[in-house]
Every structure is written in C-alpha cells, then in structure tokens.
Length: 79
Image (tube, rainbow, N blue to C red):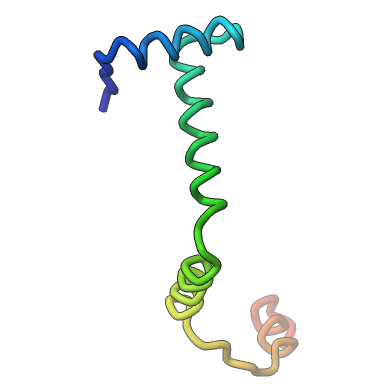
C-alpha cells in the first residue's frame, strides 16, 4: 500500500535528509523509519522480549530427549 504524506513539515524534513544523505526521498524515509523502529525495539522491556521467546518455545513443543545417534543413523539408513 502506498504511503502518501501531505504534511509540509514532513516534506521539508524529508528533503533535508535527502540533501544531507544524497539519497532519494524514498530511501531517506526508509532509513529514518528503520532507525526509529530499531530505537523502539531496543527500548522494549526485557519482560516482553522474554515473553515472545517463551511463546516461540511453547509453539515449538517440548524437547524429547532420546537416542539421537540412533535417530540420525535411521534417517541416513545406517541403523
């Protein structure tokens, strides 16, 4: 979906960034947005980062210890 911005101040800032970086307006906006996303991700509390990790671990399912050599040998037809 295209992004249309009709705010003169935003346009002025984008033009200023274009002039400073020598990029296109699209690239200047991409860089600026990417940096802001990184800043906000870095500020996320450790609890929310850990919660996401826990969700991923639960989705992956339990670890089932077993005879991994026998399983690998069976996969390779050596067992």
